[in-house]
Length: 273
Image 1 (cartoon, rainbow, N blue to C red):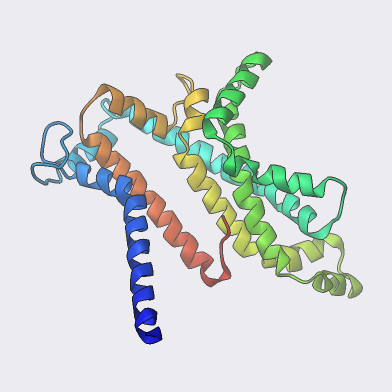
Image 2 (image 1 turned 30 degrees about the vertical axis):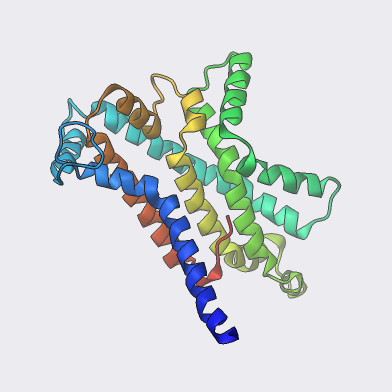
């Protein structure tokens, strides 16, 4: 009876896991399937399959007249994501070091605040940022989306850097100091190499989060600063052209490639989200 139960339990667990994964991936699979339809408008399930909409998406990218707004939105999203990735690292690395190596009043509160953007409703955050920007009365443009995305991406950078630095004993830094290394050399040759997996993971995750973030960007975008997720949403509301799904599939492929690169660069050293 125990042996039979031992065989049934893994099968049941595997079945439940497969169902959960299918539910989680169903929106992504739907986008990919719809991008392969041969219909003129959105129909699900598709009456047939074709790559014609990928050709349409390529024409939109290549044609200077038809795809100007799309390329502008793509360039805006890439620029925002790169700036967010760099700023998150510049802020997150010293913050992670302070949280791991120093004791100070209010440390527990800081740790809670760092993780808060992960669980706080994005709609509320978007409205809050919009109210703050409106009250300031300053046209920040590009910068206001960058600041909002840095706040959203910081937890990923800090948590990954903290995880990497926690594996480095303090005695290694103390030994370097004892042997005559100054603070900067200890940081450069001991601390940062130990934090390398967390830094890489955090920066790539910050890029992915910023590039795909829609809710907060929807409250903060302007005519001149129009991120790609907002463009895709606006286009899907005004057109039933399946080209939108082909472009969205391209974004999915980009995300998959970045996650694959993250796994290859960090791998068994671990990533925390």
